[in-house]
Amino acid sequence: METLGATVWLTGLSGSGKTTIAHKLLKVLRARGLKVEILDGDVVRTNLSKGLGFSKEDRDTNIRRIGFVADLLSRNGIVAITAAISPYRSVRGEVRENTERFIEVFVDAPLEVCESRDVKGMYAKARRGEIKGFTGIDDPYEVPAAAEVVCHTERETVDESVEKILAALQARGHIPSAYAADGERTVC
Image (cartoon, rainbow, N blue to C red):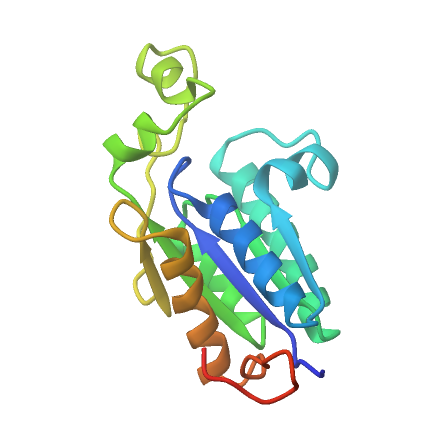
């Protein structure tokens, strides 16, 4: 099964559900026989962007690096799924401009919902001033101006969010329609 490849850019606050959606989307796309990779913000910071801090300049550099790798993968027929907060609209726009098959997915959840999901206690530390420059607390998150998909994770299931993304990928011809076990095309 051939795919043109694409970059699925999941953006949203910490705790919004980006990683959960990314892993479910990966599973669904791999089950369809597609080549897929996840570029998770935390994992990239540990490996590709080690040494970068959390200043605006360092965050932008991190996002540009993720975007470069995602574009490289997608140009080679792989669906690259990114799951990074990527708080600044301008650098997301740069990545969009430099990526041929780009779909921005705003993983939208209210701040209080994200805080309630925070098992690491990062939001609480930021509120106490122990962490400076935390997105959503004392550093801004700029909501996408024109995301192709918006997932409202406080009121829709992970499966519903994934279905929205699949529909957008299929509508743009970035992935083929789903196939049934007998090889017949099915509508997703």
